[in-house]
Length: 361
Image (cartoon, rainbow, N blue to C red; front, side):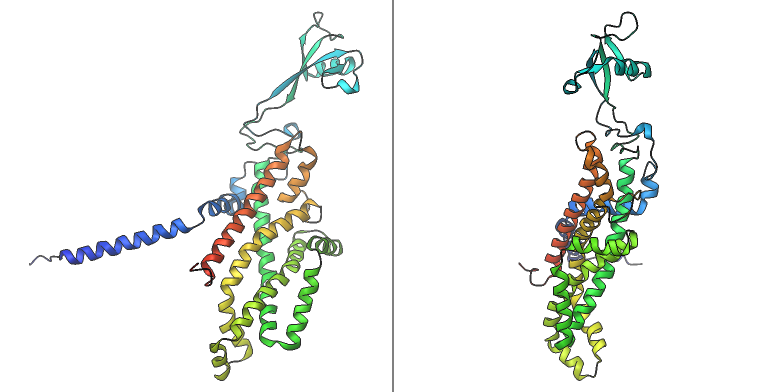
């Protein structure tokens, strides 16, 4: 049987094609916003999906003996005070009253550093206190004032943020997109009425309107989603209306009318597909806005009720302990900042890729 031979020209063409495909893949990967994607995947998506499996502790129940433990890299610290008969309130950082000193030694909360030869605490002795407990890997990011693990609560808080943003954008974005298309296509009184409602809605401060709605309906997970959806729909309606007005003037819309297509078919089969890119970019940019709104409402006590570990609730729990237990306040704030910043960067990248006006800039 004769052997099949391949010409060098064919082999060279195949090699060039494979090289070209690899080059395109590498170029596409390099163009991706890798850092924002990595932050969103590891800070928001994975914790939200696998919080029950990844969280090291219960997010609702804490151990009071472990309250306000610092992160693992913070070591324990000690301080000393001089025992006096009666401590001056302006010198409590260096002095301690005799009665209080004896009580702390009996409880094992302090040791006699100097003096106390007879085994008792007397004025003039120096006591050594544990000023701050050290952190450990059992609680990598520390604990709050109720002894609950900060890392576990941040993971479960990511689930709350992802669910609220997804449902609120789906509800508010869907309503706004529908009303925006309807206003642009129908025009006339329909357009005027919808746009005046949009103007009235946008004239109200978002947080004030949200607080009023929460006060009228009552705080809760469903309430937060409905309130944020009410705050979002007007933005979608205005942006979609502007895009739909331009699409409405295209020739293929006129041909669809001539062919006998109904108004609903023209809107859903011809106008809406050309709005998808705009809606997707707007939805991506609105995720950060929704997370800020949800966190703000939770911080003010009008959002997700405690003990559900929403990020805004965690920030509110730590606002009075910034100087003594800074980690309770800091890590939820970092989670909010990194998530919102990453979503905004991803939205800008999508806009540059999907907007034909910016694609060749």
